[in-house]
Length: 84
Image (tube, rainbow, N blue to C red; front, side, top):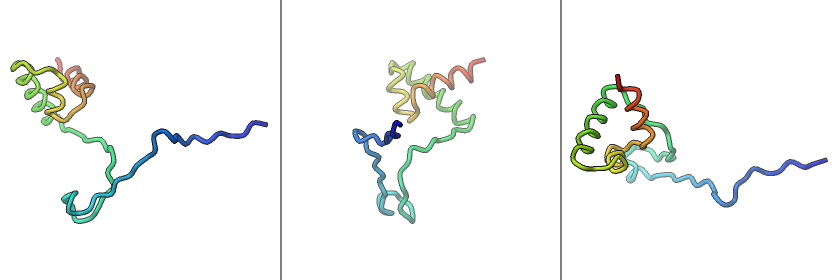
């Protein structure tokens, strides 16, 4: 009979960082997570307009996405959904 293997990955340990109130700007310390940020349609339109202006000024897509704080995949998904 085979024994179950552990699924713990020792090469990439999970690290949780708890910020002090002074660093986080909040009244209580919070655990940092990679939670999704939702953008309302007006924000998407505004950010796509900013990206258009940056691209017209000669910036590449990666630099524009870094400036707007969105992933390149999000930028392209927004482009597809807002085109039309």
